[in-house]
Length: 178
Image 1 (cartoon, one colour):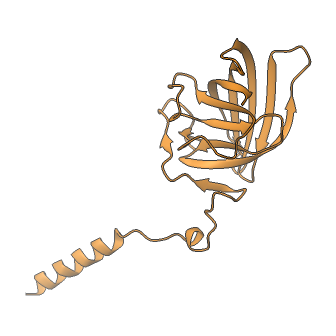
Image 2: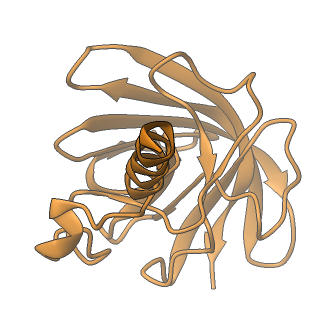
Image 3: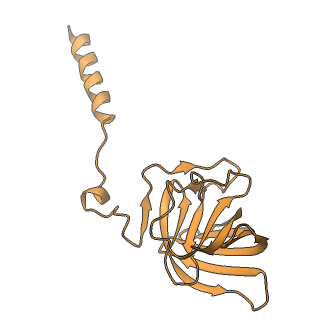
């Protein structure tokens, strides 16, 4: 009889450890997507293993961010499909709005910083950041890709501010105005 009681206690212990628990951040409402901090994406999909490093992994945004309006850049990891399910980084271009990037299976909102577009150049550079990440985007205009947008190629460099680790992601995408 004693082994049966011990067996039942073990089963109860194992099943109680597997229950989902609300995180402290969820309970306090800190995982609201309207904040300026990193927030987990509900269904962010990790990108292929070749994108990223041990601590910085690329992920796809779950959808095109509604906050991106008017003039924009929508970037995809080079070698991945260019479609609505594989956005890696999207940001407002030229109007100071936020950007959104998929990192470590999170949808991270980053604020705009400096941008550099030399006159007569086909090169653009943008800086975004939040408390955890610095995101530097360097793009080369590859030419027209429709009536109101151009195709761009380049790199997105992400620095983890806590560890100092820098990871580069090759990208392709579109920049234009709606």
